[in-house]
Length: 515
Image (cartoon, rainbow, N blue to C red; front, side, top):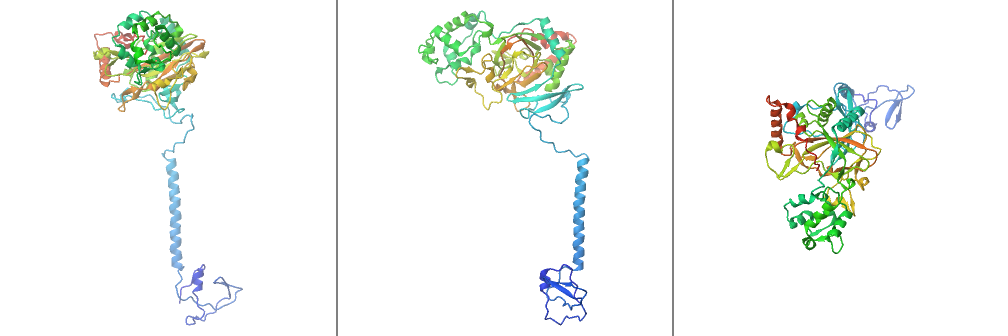
């Protein structure tokens, strides 16, 4: 006898039933059924003789149904087990996926703790990551306090840390500077200028080639203006250049451009005499301010020592590098004070020596510069009017020195065009800003100068502005820097030398020249 079909026999199986094949007729009475679309349904308990299926055997047999249900249950159990595993894993030590932060929000990551010198590779310099403009991250610079550091730009890598100093600390620094005494800040001496120029051994043709940036055989006004610091400390403008041309009759046709032939006809001493005869006002100088230096080494005021340690924690640089850097410079800008755009450090070429390592290296070099790897600037008071710190080309796509001067607008001029710079930082008491003056070299050391670090102090239109600077000095020549650190450690640890006589603040006591 054939196996009975399942209740849900398919339409195809029903259609294989033959009414004409009587050989398989069972003769058993069957209940009356109603046929709907090929299926037979019992009706009112009546009987109807059913014909057994013929042809293809029904596939939905009882064993098949049992196997199918077993596999279905196994599938459901596996799915439930997988969901349970995921749930347990997410609650037991699994790291949640970090959420995306909106611009300007603070990460929920734990505070960045200071890096100890023992964990640092002495052959590499740590460098913070800016991530993106507006990015904020938490810092632990002092016990039981969290600071928030905001990225202001990526070119240069520039950060802002509000409340880096307390109000009392700012007042103390100002008082210490006043007790020490401040002197006028000068870029180049204004006296004996002509005598100084006579000592420069350089031919007239060399001067022309030096000024002719694009080497087209003509000197345009903006090409001359890029060398304004060759003057007697006076900031040169397009108007002052034209006045000088008229005075020495350098530009006969008055077009503001000097050809090579016109330049050859000039007597360079006439330029020197003209510059030396001009009376320079404080507002005409590259920098109009007063400054002094405060000791931060061993034995200094506890607040000064605390600030130095805070800078170490902020930059993650080895303490021996920070401790052997320049002392704190405190600067006062009265109403009308300014500092035209400049760089805190200069490029270091093979013929250039760093101020802090030249004596230890015992190498002679025709040029010298302050190798300031990092600048940390502190605002010591709230300025009533003006006094912002401007970064004229921050985050520019490209940099070209001549592009700083367009249509008689000099972006470096912080008295006239401070509002045209890309970025301005408002001075707020206690806030610190810091940036890197050099790019990395790709091997964990100091590379080329970051030209985007060009910055200046905007004109103080009302009130007084007090700031302080901490510069961290690193020689781009790694060998010289490591030799310098070894020698300084030897001096400090020597039993025959008084440690106070070998502090770096002593060696910088007579250094007041800014780049």
